[in-house]
Structure formats: structure tokens, C-alpha cells
Image (cartoon, rainbow, N blue to C red; front, side, top):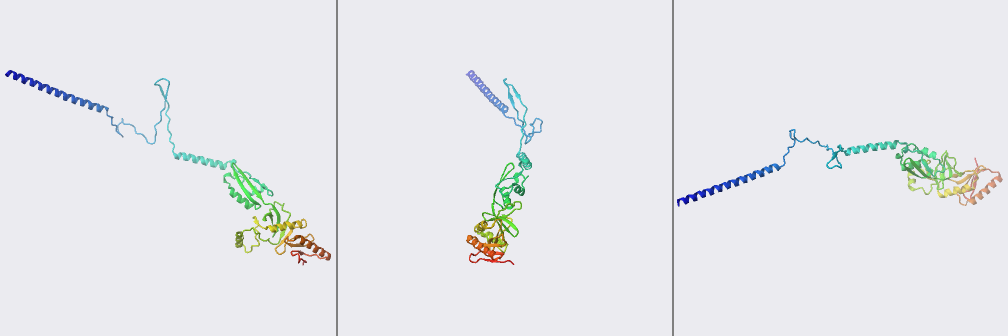
Length: 348
């Protein structure tokens, strides 16, 4: 029995040694595996780079505002063969440079337009003139040599109407490179009105404007007036009130140097009608007191007032002249203003 107990004791000790050996091996294998895993992790981890390092192996600093040059590689037909082309610098142009360049170009264009003879006006092309000459209008307008960009059509129209009262309407057109076209409607005078040593013309609408010395072709119907005619009804009330503020008397409404309504329709018709019955080349006369008449070639003045019953008045006048010539009387004035009360006046 003693022998068997020893045998069992030795076998149990062997089993304990084997168990300890296996346990230690297992622990060693586990620790080795952990070491291998940690080594692999350390190998695969990304290296940490330091910024602003003072060592020579640190990356060079990049300057702000500078761009890297682009590189172009040209592939060849042979596999794997390429040619590296020269790098092209990238130029960055700011808005300030663009605006400065645009300003320089604009200034140069303005200087060219203002100094180029192609954009300077020569003589204006004028249409509608009948009594005036283009030379007279261009001389008064004085735009020769001016840049076309400095001309204002509205201002030119106002200047022409002010300088030439004989124009009823004016239209100015300006075009490139140096074109100025003026279209005017010139008044057609029918009466030459002489008063206070001043000569003005009256058109078919009763508007008066001063006569020019350089145009002697005035109408043959001449009226020598001692007073101004009645104010025509077409004159607006506002203009009359303004004239009253400036002058105490409204009777002298004619302003020489500009076109103004001057004769009413009835007065204009009376002048033209009486001019047909007057002696040839003899002027008509007008007086505020006696009305219209003419200068008789025999040396006196006859007044008819207006043209009402003009045929009867002329017959009465011829009868009076025949009676005076028969009696040898030479009057200074004969009045037939009132058909039933004609009279004559002797000179001093």
C-alpha cells in the first residue's frame, strides 16, 4: 500500500508541473501577441510634424500672396515617357489696376475726341432760308471749329430765335462726326412800317420784326406812321400787364429787336386793301387821330380812317380834289374819314 501511495503522489506532482508549464506558456504567448500588435500600431501611426521648427529639416515657410507656378507635363506616344514644359507664372491683377487702366483709356479717348479735326464743326447746313444767307447765319452763330460734343441743340435754337426775329421756328439737329443741320421757317414780310426813324417789317400774320440793312429787298407796301397802331387782340393779357409794370403807356408796345404781335387782322387787311388803291410808288400814312391814308403826288395827305366803304370814300375824295383844282386851292390835308362830313385843311 505504501508503494502505491508514492506512485500516486509522484503522478500528481507531474500533472501539477505540466499545468504550470502550459499556463506560463499561455501567458508568454499572450504577452508576445500584445507586443506584436503594439509594434504594428506604432509602425502604422502617422508621424507628427512640428510647425515653425527651428531645425534645418523643417519645411520652408510659404509667403502669403505668392502662388506656386503651374507645371505642365506633356505625354508622349511611348509608354511612361513625358516632357516637362517650362512653368508659367500666374499673374494676379487687382481691380485697382483695372480701374486705373480704364481711366487712362478714357482720358486718352476724351483728348482724342476734343482735339481731332474730324469732330470739329465747319459750317452749319441751313434749310428754309429765303431772304437771309447761310453766311450771315453761320457768322452770327459762330460755331465753326467747336467740338461737336460741346454743342447744345436747344441752346442753339434759343440763340437763333434771339438773333434772328425773322425766324418763326428753328430746329437744330447735331450728329457725328461734325454734322449740324438747321431747319428754319422764315417770316414773309408784306408791309414795311417806318416809325420814329426805325424800319421794321410786318408779315402776313401781323408780327413785326426789325429790317436788316444788308437786305434791301423790303416789301413795296410802305407805311409811314406818326403813332403806333392799336394793340392787336392776339396779345396775351399777361404780356400787357408785364409791359404796364415796365412802361406807364401801353400804346407804344413795339419793342424793336424782337418779333412781336403788331397789327390786328382788320388793320392788316385795311393796309393791304388801301395799298392797292394808292398812287404807285407812294407810301401810305397812319395817324392815331385820322387813321390810314396816303401821300398824294400833288403835294398833300389824304386820310380815309379805315377801309369801311372805301369805294365811296375814294369817289368823294376825287370829287373834292376836282373842286379844289377848279378853284385853284392847294390844301395840305384832306380828310374823308366820315363820308357825310369830309373836309380839307390849308397849310400855314
